[in-house]
Amino acid sequence: MRLTQGTFSFLPDLSDDQIYRQVQYCIDNGWAVSLEYTDDPHPRNTYWEMWNRPMFDNPDAQALIEELKEARAQLATYYIRVVAFDNSHGWEAPRLSFIAHRPAEEPGFRLERTETEKRRQQYTLQPYASAHPPGQRYR
Amino acid sequence: MADDFDPQRPSRRPRNQGPGGGEQPGAPGDQAQQPAEPAPSPAPDTVDLNAEWQNAGVQQVLDELDRELIGLQPVKRRIRETAALLLVERARTRMGLTHETPTLHMSFTGNPGTGKTTVAMRMADLLHRLGYLRRGHVVNVSRDDLVGQYIGHTAPKTKEVVKKAMGGVLFIDEAYNLYRPENERDYGHECIEILLQVMENHRDDLVVILAGYTGAMAKFFQSNPGFRSRIAHHIDFPDFQDDELLEIAKLMLGEQHYQLTEAGEQALKDYIAKRRAQPHFANARSVRNALDRARLRQAMRLFETAEGPLDAAALSTIDAPDIYASRVFKGGLDSDHASSEDDGQPAG
Image (cartoon, rainbow over all chains, first blue to last red; front, top):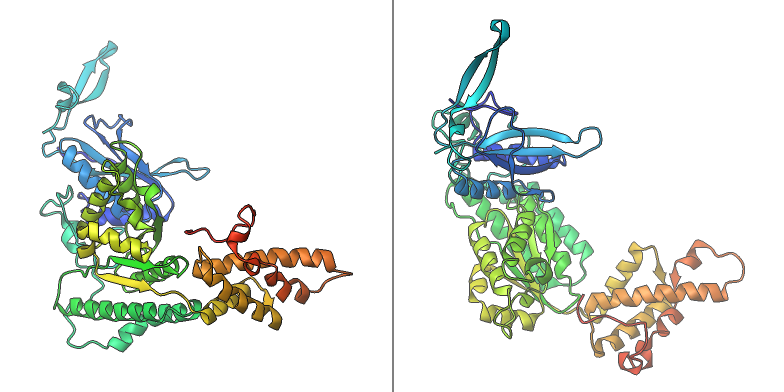
């Protein structure tokens, strides 16, 4: 199952060139771009690990592309996303984030139904991959 | 799809390199978006170089260079040649005659104060207009910004700087400092290795300009042959003539809305001739320092002699006494070492 999250979740994965343009757009708007990665891509997990430092003062997006290449080489079995943070007053929030790399195999999520009192159903999403310890979840 | 965010971006960057996460075959967005190159799709049969020259704004940059930089004829000629070469190269690329990106790394050698930094800025602008640089900004660094203080500190530091310079010019001032042969554990080696790698692999992304004094740079290139072979353009900056320095002085004063009296001009002429013979002469930088101090003295003179209100002309006129008071006329720097009024340091 192909995981979709973030700004361009409805699109096919962006090519490096398209990523370059998106990131350049962010930089031109004065947002701080950074890379984050995780092997726990549950939709409710907002705490992804940060790759290196946020790139505040690189005027050209090629710098992030270089970092992304390095991250992909080292974290091939992780999800990597690009995050653009807007620190201007009133926003102070990520303005844009999208997945830039995904593991080759994505087993997806299991929907768990639990019956509670009066036959009420509770639903939980459980990633199949989370059966393994962190670091061994995807291939 | 938001694909037109940066229409300015030249097509020079090789597309879709590396293990692309987003390059699955059949992703419909990809193929449709890729050929949006500014180059006309069928290769043109002819090229009007003059029109290209005008359109790229090359002439504009060269005119600016002529206007703002006095003298430096050999440098200007080299820049003109380089611009012509790059323009022809670009036309050839469009016609499909060549696919390699030319090496653009340069070295600027010359004495202090001969305009290396200023020319680097213009060069970045020129390369940006010709489409060889995406942003055209200049990142000005020296050894301190590149070389770390302990093991493992240098590589990340250098890489940070390189990333900052992507799309522009990495100007390394006094580059010979990177290599310190007298200390074999010096971390400069590590930095040099990374720089060489970057100069080879990221020719599309940034241009490295090494600057320094002629003698020291010659030694530097001798001991680092890798640099010599990766640098295509060696530009030597000659010293300014006395009359050129006077022109420069007038230009500097004009920018600050000051003017020289006739006697003041003669005084400045004498000053330049005398100053040149003294140690630590740094061409235009010495002149700038001299003018700064002349303004200081002018202010004092106004305070001490003014009777009644002063008009704008009086406030912005530098006279002979302001310049003749310099200790250059009293035997030079060596006459009073203890003076707080220290002139041009050997290097900026």
